[in-house]
Image (cartoon, rainbow, N blue to C red; front, side, top):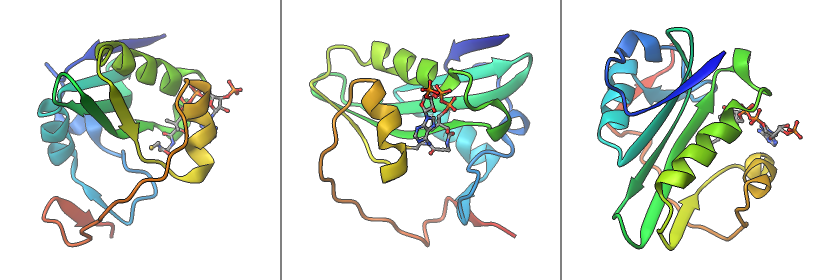
Length: 136
Ligand SMILES: CC(C)(COP(=O)(O)OP(=O)(O)OC[C@H]1O[C@@H](n2cnc3c(N)ncnc32)[C@H](O)[C@@H]1OP(=O)(O)O)[C@@H](O)C(=O)NCCC(=O)NCCS
């Protein structure tokens, strides 16, 4: 059974190993724990004690929120966990005017099912950011 928790109380970096599937360089598990702890909202999905998915959001609390990260472990995809994580984070952001996500085109239908719309966005990525570890 999948359970959900808001916040990272009691979660260890070891439970966050193996995320950022497919990223050439990625935050370490301990960096991910800090990222989630410092987020306005973080929701985690558990299978027993195993963290099998997470989503986070950053917000000014009134006008704007951004959802930077959403991932479900490959072993647990296709069971509605990603949908439930986004539903829960959107609930927590209810009241914000702008709730933005940047995603690859192939993931856009996933967010469209949740009521989001496509819009052109602009981004900058610093591939040398200190938080990133090169995949060996
Ligand atoms: C995107 C992701 C979080 C979805 O998680 P999930 O738990 O598998 O999603 P769900 O089971 O709730 O899927 C809900 C629906 O969205 C569809 N869907 C899931 N992932 C999709 C994707 N990558 N692209 C398009 N549709 C997708 C499913 O087919 C499903 O549709 P159905 O109910 O008609 O079968 C997961 O595939 C993932 O972690 N991908 C890698 C990381 C990523 O791309 N994150 C998004 C960053 S913006």
